[in-house]
Length: 419
Image (tube, rainbow, N blue to C red; front, side, top):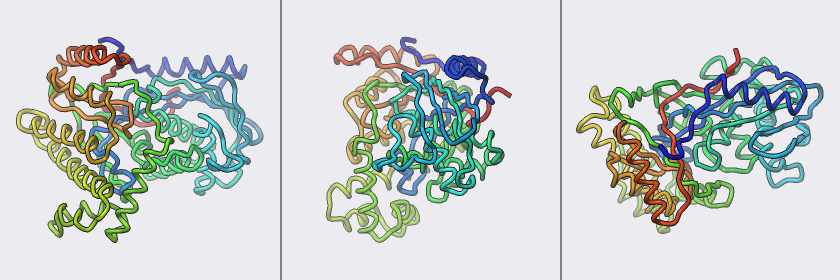
């Protein structure tokens, strides 16, 4: 398959960051840890609305080699960025303030900052550290490369500082919350909590049904191989940024709409519709602002699509025949809602989805925050290559950069990878 992006084995990834660490710091690390990127099967822009989403952890991971060091200075190198960076952990401060950490080190230093601010480690107790980073999670593709970095550092610091949080799901949920705070406050990206939950709390062979209202999770079996299917991820290579104001704008409009409706989050609206206490039309009639109506319509219907898709997966004949057709319908409807009502798609994403469907995909949708990034297509396994070729040809015909592709199956969570 053209431009297929491979996932590294744990041994390969560990060897890469150990070599970078030795070259940069002339020493051996205390260990190597890794965390996966994620692809969201369905449930977009629902996390910060208290809703439901269904991500899986990718086989593609970010690897970090870390060594604790005296003092409170973090020294950081990345195979993806030039130079060595230093951050004073005691001086790190939120984005937009005098002590803001610039660039990618904000995601790393922010985790240490959040662990202490959240009381998961006593203030000032975490050591300084040297860290080397390398990753096969595509950057800027909407596959949570930032969360993979945060979560890899979170489990590394948990290990070297003997916090013990990664030992069970409750502790991992607290680590995920700290990573979300790091991204929101130190990196300045107003994301929800889905990415970090997927990276830290996933289970191999399962999708993660995440309830973003209370953080509860359910592991839903997702065996694409058994159904003769594959999940083709299409990296459109259109720039994907969450800190340019568009994402924050969507979140603010949803929060404003919730206040108008007198609810804590739009999840309450979706639950009321599901319970038969109201209808979508009745809810929308209470909103005078057209932008709010479109955003609310997407969130309410997307939460219902997550429920619908999960119900299909619980069917004994999940992803076959009628159940497959219905699952594909949910993916297609999700994309249309994101394109029309939430307005977060892009010409590249629309083309990828349209071309994949025309080439035989059962269903396709954009995935991630939007404004560029990636799409997914549910395809028969033997059709993955022809579908990818068709998408590539469509991009060439439109004069666009060639897309890249990867195959996604449900892998396990962040952890130590060198024993």
